Amino acid sequence: MPSPTHYATPGQLIQELLDRRGWSRKTLAIILRADETGINRIIAGKRPVDAQLAIQLHEVFGVRADHFLQIQKRYDLAQAMIVARPDPERATRARIFGSLPIAEMIKRGWLDAESLRDDAKVKAALLKFFNAPSLEEIEVLKHSAKKTNTNDDATPTQLAWIYRVKQIAEDMIVNRYSEKTLRGSLGKLSALLSAPEEARKVPRILAESGVRYVIVESLPSAKIDGVAFWLGEDSPVIGMTLRHDRIDNFWFVLRHEIEHILRRHGQSGTMLDVELEGEQAGTGETVSREESEANDAAADFCVPKDALRRFIARKFPFFAERDILGFARTLQVHPGIVAGQLQHETKRYDRFRNHLVKIHSAVAPSAMVDGWGDVAPVGI
Picture (tube, rainbow, N blue to C red):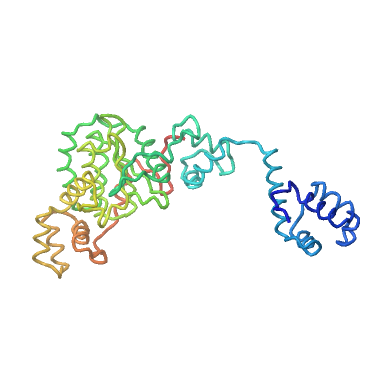
């Protein structure tokens, strides 16, 4: 029996089988207890051979059922390709809609569209959001942002979050950036470490230094803690997610991003910090130089390294509650900040958790915030 590829339609194979046996189409119709008109349509390629008929033909001719189905499938595809209308944007839409959290972006108010199915409005909203002239030029899969401890590109979801931070930051008015003023503000920020509610002063202090400070709720699976980048040579931006709503994490991430700005990291790209805890908050060989520098500055800002090491050397492995409280009072910082650094140094993240108070409600009212049910009034 010739290969199925020798036939354009199942009908051609059926006709050959009939001719070999000297049967008429009427004969086949009688054998199959089928209508002769239907047999004629199948042989003419006007009616498809389905799985049930393929099995019947196998019983009659001894030809495998999948031979008929393979020919039918190939013929159907050829017919579809003749009438199909090419859509150059289909592959682009697959990349964008398959990568970006479009539904979440609509829900968060980032895209001016009511439904994923409203193709025209979604497309227009995406072009506006990413400031791109066409879908093909939306920067989804070719971003140059560096993530903590890796040189991998940012994911499309992380990229969308960065763009939202950028969108909000561009709409802000702050003082002209001064590295001297920002360095001088470190003392003011350090004075706020004693109580969670003092964090409300952070946005104003940064704005006075010329830093645009934005809080944008993280997107699902993004795992972003913070970002530092520049809108221009003298327009630095710090974005945070507060996804870990803890006083220790807030101050560590904030000081980490400030160090990026002070060292002018991110001027040729974006310093995106992902999962900035555990090993990623360290200074080992697996951490890049830029991140090590920022981690070192952040840890020393929260609890001076030498003082922390002396405290651990004196108290390890038992850290009494009164010792932690006394050490925090000596440093004039909240016990939660000491607890966070102790967790990192001892690798015991299950301990001292009662001190890790929340910070969101303190800092959010005085900051530019997007998320948690609120939409920053820009970009729409």
